[in-house]
Amino acid sequence: MPLSPTATRDLLAQLGHQPKRFLGQNFLVDGNIVRKSVELARIQPDDTVVEIGPGLGTLTAALLETGADVWAVEKDRNLHAHLEATLAPRFPNRLHLLEGDAVEHPLANLPIEHARGGFKIVANLPYAVATPWLDAVLSGPLPMQMVLMLQQEAAQRYVAHPGSKSFGAISVFLQAAYDVAPGHKVAAACFFPRPDVESQLLNLIRKPVPFVFPAKVKALIRGCFQQRRKQIGALLKARLPAHSQKWRELLQTGGLSDQTRPEAIPVEWWVRFSTMPPLA
Ligand code: SAM
Image 1 (cartoon, helix red, strand yellow):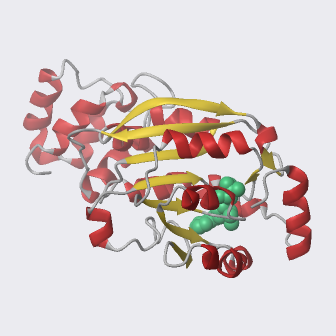
Image 2 (cartoon, rainbow, N blue to C red):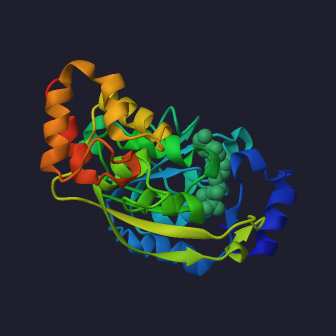
């Protein structure tokens, strides 16, 4: 698989493929970062790994070489066909390729019995769908670990703390289920073509007792963060008018008030809130 800008450019020319910006096609061309991604995920032979957007197969090949089974979903028809023709035959029955959209197939059609046995996700994510895809993954079944390459700004939002401008609904959903282990900054030069911004490799480890927010609570929390300048009292009064006594009590027990803004409310409070009748 290509592991330098020149080899990548040559392969793209050979395939007659122009990298598509709208699909976030910035291919990894740095062997150290590919190795680091596999190492951080501590992939063992027989592990089950889901990959989003295998592209030219650079990361995919490194994952397969560990002896793991890989389930991957690629939206680009030409790249999918290229991988089916070149990489799949090298790893019979171990590479399961799906041509499709990762937001519709967040786990690349990994069968539920494999998901239940435990799996990991390793991916250099297409930036345009990173958040809706992650949101879908966080509805479960949850991977044991995720090693994700992201644009710096998205990575910051995911791991942001309450009180920061970047703290949002996706930070709440992710941090209720995952701990963030140290990751790495990744320079634009590690990709071809070079993206305009720096990236970050995030290492997310599932909590011993992860929490998955039900779909309707997720919608409610998302709605609150969309009006993040408003106070929580006004937001909840509009959404749960018949239960104001309950959520007011809950705010008080959490040391918060009607005037607190959603971005200042800790993850643990949102978890408690979502288990409060009538939401639970
Ligand atoms: N994994 C490759 C690598 O690291 O070199 C390519 C990563 S590139 C950042 C993102 C890949 O995701 C591209 O191959 C792109 O075609 C694919 N992609 C973009 N949007 C997608 C979507 N909605 N569903 C699945 N794949 C998508």
